[in-house]
Length: 116
Ligand SMILES: [Zn+2]
Image (cartoon, rainbow, N blue to C red; front, top):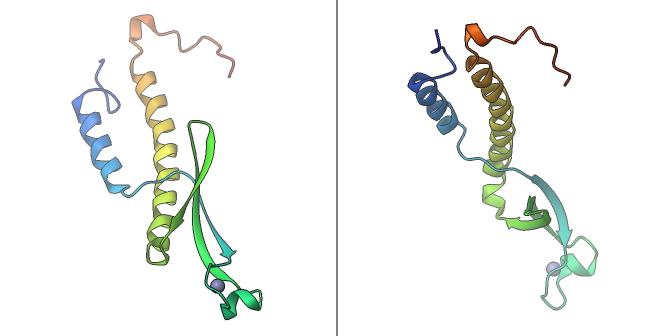
């Protein structure tokens, strides 16, 4: 049998359903930093407390970038990063299983030693 749990339309539908549940997704890191503002004589800046700001840092085309995250979106951004990690974990597992399912019994070289 060439069809299995990891090939064919059934697997594609299942994958689409699982991936949709992992919304929103993001890849990067969230950090909390303290920044000065531009207001003159700001009490928080004058005594060194400054202002709490959340940054989402990520890589794009080999470059590190950061974007401000509104305080109200921090919880969702954390969830998006967790979802992104789960998505990557599933990508690895799904690819491995799909490739394993492409083997036909008459061409089965699975006994061959493959160095990682
Ligand atoms: Zn300030």
